[in-house]
Every structure is written in C-alpha cells, then in structure tokens.
Amino acid sequence: MTPLRLRGVTLRNRLVVAPMCQYSVTDGFVGDYHLVHLGRFALGGFGLVIVEATGVTAEGRISHGDVGLWSDEHVPGLARVVDFLHAEGAAAGIQLAHAGAKASSRRPWDGGGPVTEENARPGEHPWPTVSASAVPAGDGWPAPAALTVAELAGVRDAFVAAPAPSRGSRRACEA
Ligand SMILES: Cc1cc2nc3c(=O)[nH]c(=O)nc-3n(C[C@H](O)[C@H](O)[C@H](O)COP(=O)(O)O)c2cc1C
Image (cartoon, rainbow, N blue to C red):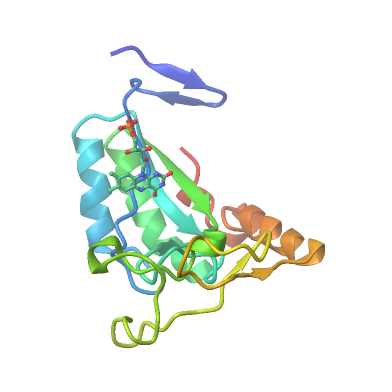
C-alpha cells in the first residue's frame, strides 16, 4: 500500500472510511459502540477513519442519536476513540456538521422525517430548528427559524470552537 501525504498528515494507505451516521448515542456522547464501530476499521487496515456527521450545536443535530462536539464534555469519549485509531496506525478525521432544516429528524429505522410529539421516542422531543432561511426541508417538515447574520456567525463560531485546542479537543480532530 502506498502512503498518502496530505499536508502534515501521512496516511498509511489511500483507504478512507467515509463518515457514517449511526444515530446510536445519547446527548452526543460516544462510548463503547463507537470505539468498536470505528476501531474495527483501524484494525482492518484503513488509512483514515472519519467520524460521522457530528453536531457542532445541539440544535444542529440531525437526530437525538447524533454524535456531538458542542461541549467539552464530549471530548473524552472522542479522544478515547482517536487514541485507539492512532494506536492501530490509522489517522482520525471528523465531519463537523449542522443539519439546519433537517435537524430534529427521526432515526431512519424509526421512519425518518421530522420528530413530532406523537412519533417521538420517550423523552426525545422535537426541537425548534434553525437554518440559513425559513424554507422547510420538504413537505410535512416544520419551517426552521431563519438565522440572522449575527446568528449565522454564531454557527460559524461553533464550527471553529468544536475542534479548538483550547477546549482540549485537539486529539478528537487531528490525525
Ligand atoms: C450508514 C451510512 C451513514 C452515512 N452517514 C453519512 C454522514 O454522516 N455524513 C456524510 O457526509 N455522508 C454519510 N453517508 C454517505 C457516505 O459517506 C458516502 O458518501 C456514501 O455511502 C456514498 O459513498 P460511495 O460513493 O463510496 O458508495 C452515510 C452512508 C451510509 C451508508
């Protein structure tokens, strides 16, 4: 396998695991599920393993089951996964995300579409969504609140803050 150099990171080969939402965490916290799910790809020899779409804000999650990085408290779980990937020779990546009008969705195997009080899992209420415009994601979806320019800057800042070294989350996003 030919190593691939990308700026400061050298992958051991060109095999990359794309981000794949698992909708399998609570309140954004990864645990054993993600250690096994992502760790197996490192054991399998991939050069780069990219963590699934990860909410930079709670309201920007696709679903209640999304991985999150809007709090320092999310860092240890992700760092544990990254340490394992590195120990097995893989580089780690993460897809930082904001779902906009598609936030507050049901998990695909629950039927997809927007969460409502009627179809919600116990304790998993719908939440008001925000986006760049008030255009709904589709028929039957609630209209998101249109963010102001200042509020959009806040979303931008959340993307910047999510992997910020000062928050101790550096290892969660660096190879
Ligand atoms: C289970 C599953 C979850 C996925 N989750 C994400 C995701 O979190 N972010 C993303 O950008 N794409 C996601 N995708 C899309 C994949 O990253 C990829 O683009 C798609 O599978 C097509 O890849 P391919 O052209 O190599 O088959 C997901 C795909 C699958 C099958």
